Image (tube, rainbow, N blue to C red):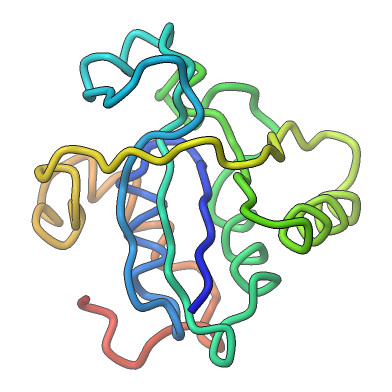
Length: 171
């Protein structure tokens, strides 16, 4: 098993996408690379803690490569807006790949180079990951009828990733 850490705005959106990718065994929402130890959602919402809303993705590399995860990640968020995804604004909503080894760092940087000059995605070593509160976990699956989920998350799930999708997408 391998682990990847991606930040692409609200972690509810990123979590819902990666839960549906073949080879992904678990996705956990949380916070990383900030100043506060054991932050809460209230701490990071100010934008002053330095944390990013991030998802921790455990995946089987024989079924999903890190490169494939990068393809999905960059196709399901706007990597050209600094510290913002839609109406969610602040450093906690930045685009980021938080690598755990040099191979991930190199793959992320190489992939970003293919996307052009407008990409603002941070590529940084993962310092520390703190799991988010339980009500943030599995958010879309537990709250899919909520307006935020319908307006912002559901369209991301309609992207064209059939070759990467699990057969049962209700995990």
